Length: 455
Image (cartoon, rainbow, N blue to C red; front, side, top):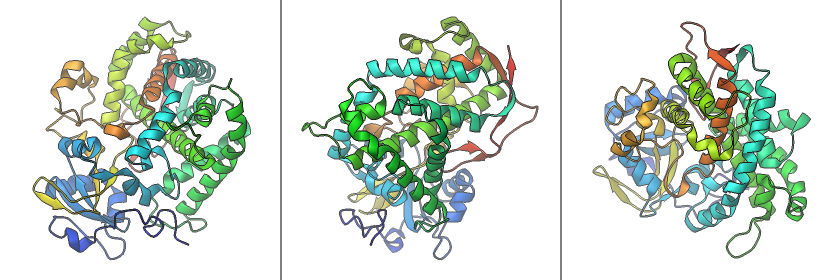
């Protein structure tokens, strides 16, 4: 039986190009069998910089058993993400990587099917439910952040906190003793996405990831019927269960579970990474931390809830978040597969080619960002944004596949920063610089050692 992420299991996919069909594009094939996989995984930013310097903005690699053409720059981002000519398949780009873990997730859909499911799922991000999520987050942050004092590891703490938020907003229940199992399932699924061994062999990363998916299927499945009947439940899962496509039918149980798995992973792991990088930069640049603290206090006193209507007032806080997302992009690379032949920067790229863009690399290119290594939230004032290429900053993707939950992410970040910064000062040891694991979702390897000092 063919595995779900294989070409054999997906006869509707466009057949992959062979390495020989791409020999006219400069690049590296790497070692026999493994290709360039381990070079990519060892140091993605360094390897990308080496390839651009050596071969230019269009180059060939051979990672995870798949020859890929990387296209670098804001123009490449626009071509792929806006995709005005429907040249690229997101399903066939992400599918070989994620089909064993997040099949039928929104990111793994194309065109009309993607549009229909995105519209159905969008009901959970309208103003009324967003106001309810705001109340939940205010309560959770007020209760839990009062215990964040002294020296601690930030990453595992924020990961547990965002899981609690996801449980409340997405599921409408406190996770209780199941929290560790659900958290482990998500961690295993994300790690499996970049596992060199792509078959679900027991005790391998992919084996653990597939087992994590099965646990979540068993967790969500039995709840669907009750969620459809209970009109009073306003959490995301209940709203998804009651949502209907344009023709009026419900999504199948399997589709609902896959959407929940994917959206909870995306909301949980990417916001964990993004807020961690933001805290790192605010600790490193205390003058910016103080500016954000004063903005938070100008909106509401310490210990007060933030109203949904006041979220737009966090102007500097949003600039700082965007700058942290620029410097450490939560999604370093975005894959697609070409559905037809196309031309880019003088190169002919044939149908069936795996292609990718790199937000993390483009976010640090000097042609778009002056002194890109410097943390400067004022890059995101309206005049600076207007003057810059629209696709020079794409941490949430773009076009039809723009992150469905980006406003949820902004809301969670602003509420968290208000409840934290108005009560404590975030400090790090002098000279401290954590090493970051760059893939699949960036995180500090040591957990990010911080000290929360009561103001």
